[in-house]
Image 1: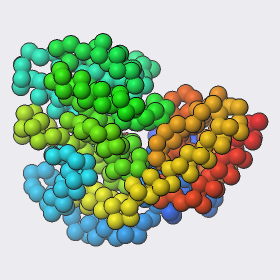
Image 2 (image 1 turned 180 degrees about the vertical axis):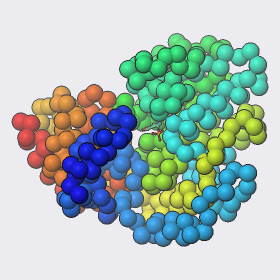
Image 3 (image 1 turned 60 degrees about the horizontal axis):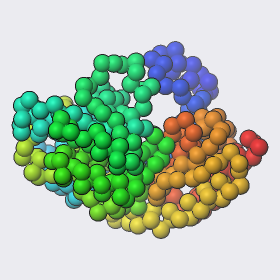
Image 4 (image 1 turned 135 degrees about the horizontal axis):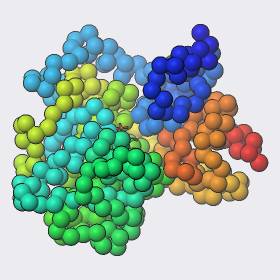
Length: 398
Ligand SMILES: Cc1ncc(COP(=O)(O)O)c(C=O)c1O
């Protein structure tokens, strides 16, 4: 079948909720994707940060194949060896004490919010349980996660959402302080805002949030669904800031393509929040995704992926800086590790579409950012090809 035929069938049947690019992917290998006509694409998007070890990793695939043949699902009524191993791997990798497995990032946020609210409720059943979230944040599309997502146009069609959310400005401690009163039970933020435009938290800001939370007995929720799992050059980006959250969310690269997320909490909070009956999910933490989680953490450590990202991050950054110096329509570059953005006066979606013609997958963020989240196995030679392709793409806009 031709790509157009697949697209027509899909569009005749799917609920049209995404504006997809007209490409039909068939398979992937390493840092490349291939469409059904056999055209090769350099992937600088990783399926929005998921495919951190690239495509068709044989060691990872073998672990999944074995688990498919052994046991796919048994429910959260019981234990499995894979659940035990994954829970230990996640608490060690995150530096947190307890973990709950979810099926997506948004569900991890829901669990984090419920944990904070239950903690506040136990302290005072009349507590207002309000949450401070950041402008331009993105935490997901379910009702709770959407309620703390700081982009008005995502929320507007769905009011009334969850009550009691206030918004402050990212990297502006005074604007957070201005929102604090005794009704607030938690502050939620990303260490690096992803969808909002690839904006890392300033060191003083993240540490300031921790101080405010400690002073006012408020919980700090850090969302590393996009920036975690080695992408920043640390296993989790917050680990570079000298702070520890009360609740941490992760997903995306946690399962390297299998749908799994998690929220993790400190021990004291685990003892003073959710109890059996408060929360649950049928699939969450099934043996297949748990085998994937343990494998992804193990392979990242074994291959020293965070160290590799730290080593090559300046190479990536200086290549992007060259783009900003060379083209008037690129006004700056920003980001950390292998999570970077070019701020542009062009329409980012047009650039991403043009890149696909050039055999390059890139992403967008916000209204003015070209976002790149390459697989964490990118080598210098891959960044060189990325540079060449970007130059071709940008020259066509000159
Ligand atoms: C920081 C952040 N939080 C939450 C989410 C929601 O995750 P999911 O799409 O798996 O529900 C995303 C997705 O892009 C994200 O980037």
